[in-house]
Image 1 (cartoon, rainbow, N blue to C red):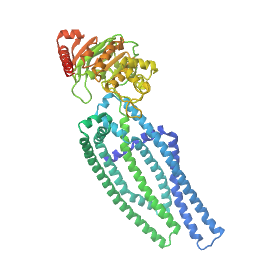
Image 2 (image 1 turned 180 degrees about the vertical axis):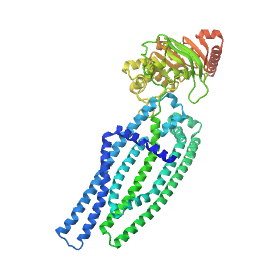
Image 3 (image 1 turned 120 degrees about the vertical axis):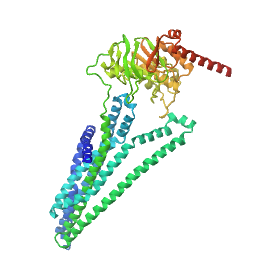
Image 4 (image 1 turned 90 degrees about the vertical axis):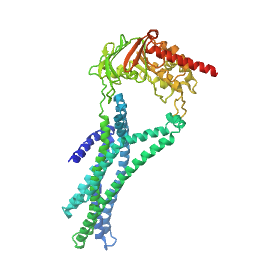
Length: 612
């Protein structure tokens, strides 16, 4: 009973699948349905015409060549040829329609998956369970959706044909249709049981397949190629890949072996039943009860009927299998984001007056029992540059995620000019911000487009793009490229130009400044720059901020000292605050770290001078 309920539950995704395919390709789907109905009737017409042709030939044997005898044969043969030709035409048309459907459905599902991937919370990307969902949803979701629809179509077509075949067989014995059904039940049981086994195995090995994808990236991607060669890691990860593939391959082959053996046994049972039916028919012919035409009709109807029942049951089994897989797609699409717009969003202020305030904020990442921030308070005044320094794990990056509203706090609030940011539209609030993340994305488009991606709603004129590039100190780098701002970046595509880590960081900085947002958030903005490039950038820093509110996360005190206010974080709390001079005078944690960093820098400089 549990298995039956599970099967019915999985097949409940069929209406959703049909709606999905209908939304992607209405006209093609309508043509496909009409085609199915016509193709469902044609096989029975062929069987019926076979009886007419055979009986006409028997009646014409020995009658010589005459108009009457030829006429008796030509009409049924002509009709048979017409039906066969029509079947071929419809088969070709069906392939064309299915191809068009497939392309449209694939594109539609890709749009749904991409839209859902962008709509769900950032926290999902930091969850292993989410990646399992995404992997299963993307694994042939388009093919599975169309396959499920094709299974349904085949079921409809074969059912129509089967009903007409049953009508043809009924005059020879009312028990024959039930005999046919019984002969196909073993094969149906095998298909249903093994499909369930295969799906369970496929679901249980999701993480294993993700490991294979990870190994594939390590062995083939340019981003890790240098370190893989330097430490000679190729053979190590190749071995890990092959060991995992060996286990998965053997498990899959065992499943296929069991499936093949089960189908063989079911096939033998079917053959025995077919033999019994043919023996009965032979007896009827010898007794003179039926004609040769009846024999031909019966043989074709019984043989095709048996094949049709197997097909119908197989269609049900395949529908069940594909429904198991397609359920992963619909489950993924049903994930609801928690960070959403309020029912009546407040209007975003045109200019910050008070600034940002973290008020008694407590936050822990999903699935974690340890709070990163607990009763945390912090004020970021409007129009000021605020630096946040601290050791790794202090909670600095978590502040950025809360400030960008990638997450909402467990308790407390993040306020903009006194209003909880949850009262604003998510997208409108995020347009207030421009962010340079610690690991900026290297977009493989030309240099001008790279900067223009900072704000797609602004007209990306070359003057504005150049201004942003000059502010970030990357204009000269771009002008040295073969086509200047039209130069393609990255090495993935033809004529691409690669940049150093610091140059990519400056380009991302230009993209951030192009956005012209009220608040600038910089997460280690100079981490990939050499000291000369950093010094050049620091000279422009306050000018670039241009009275906007800026939050800088950094480990470098040479950058922090240029801020109006410096906050020192440790273990999710602000432990010191003030200007650079104030904190040095306090001789606390900041002052000790400053002195240590300066001594290290001076020692390195002295060593370089001696070596020179």
